[in-house]
Image 1 (tube, one colour):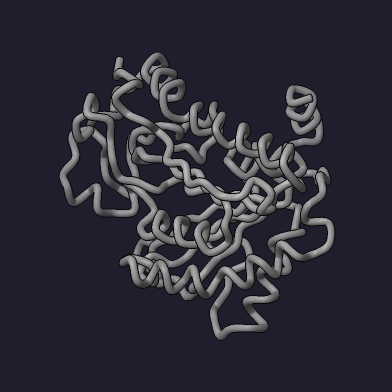
Image 2: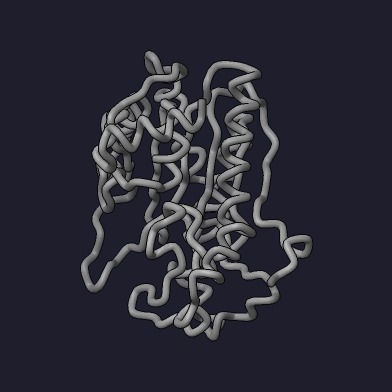
Length: 275
């Protein structure tokens, strides 16, 4: 078993607890704990999107700095375990990703999945809950903004969007953000594209939907933020529209919305466990 003392799974960025927004970056890093070696992969694999969301960490750090807000980022590759998947998701540890076989995951058993979950996945999820609790104690309930990036081309098909905004059934933050971008820029903005924001057990479901907090997941096309200057430019571009969303009515209130991803009974159970 890897020694958790030698690998800190979370990067914490300080910010004002009453800032009204918490930034997350689920796929910030391509790194692996030393005990896992390279999972049988080459350096080239760890430069690709299968290992992390290219540019997302730099974008998250800059947005947090611009808005004086706290942020939490993972420090381990999604190839080890995916912190954005539900804890019981069968793809929590991927054996194949975008047609690439992951040798170190090919024969992973339930015991190893639980080891990775307890050492890496769970501390990140616990840190999010702890930060949310601290922010609620210090000020208005925060909105959550999770930063990701997506590939310009997927299986031969170019993706036209510059940015996508994913959300489930709570549009308090996402809708004014999308509307502001579409009215105030010439960007092609995807509304639940290139992915759908309704996914039971993902970070936004567990920490946004289940807790009644306004939230959205922002995906920026990777070629636009692949270097530091691009990421910082995009942070400067997006920050005013995030602020616009944060100023929308009821964003800083706890309001429960039914999810498209899970039946109402499942959501009630989650809320009861938190109370």
